[in-house]
Length: 186
Length: 75
Image (tube, helix red, strand yellow):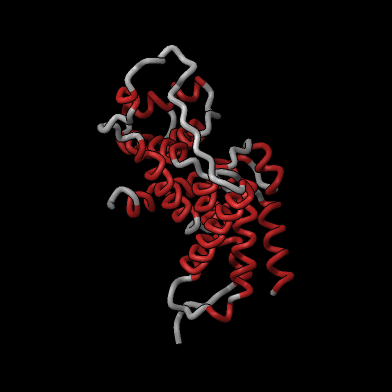
């Protein structure tokens, strides 16, 4: 009845990087994030028949990933055994004796929103990258995100540098347009 | 004087710090007289700044392949 169907063989290509960015923003560790998406995909396969098609594939996978992240934090918390509270009033520095009030966060600072906003920005960019044609997607990711050198990419993909720059140019132009639509118009 | 195509190419290269000083100089000169390249250059720089700010991560191809294989095995 519904239009949404699962295509597990395309999951890695379509969603792996998006989920990876989503997870890494929450667990702050690449290895843990990698394990979490692996578990997410496996759980997705296992409960594939429960998928009703009410949400898109990605939303559904994100929902699973969220549970996995919660499970991860539960696990590391139970390993510790007990909660621990430590309070340090900078006892060992020269600020000893200063008023605690001087150390509270600056209420006018906008910096604490930065991390949040950057995460949203990251997901918006990843969204746009995922709409690129496969080859451009690959080259742009290798060059910009993984920071590989032109030479390495050319060797790995068997293309020449001018080829690479053409693809980079097309990818960048497409991304500028996409971000203009999806990020700046919010 | 360089053409717009060349200017765009240098502009893209300089986003990855791969343009030489001489190239950058020629790009600057071109931008002075070419409105559309100046706009492109500004947008391109903005994209670089955004990508840096977002701290994007990506799985390596080998990681993706192992993941893909693991899924394939369970299908």
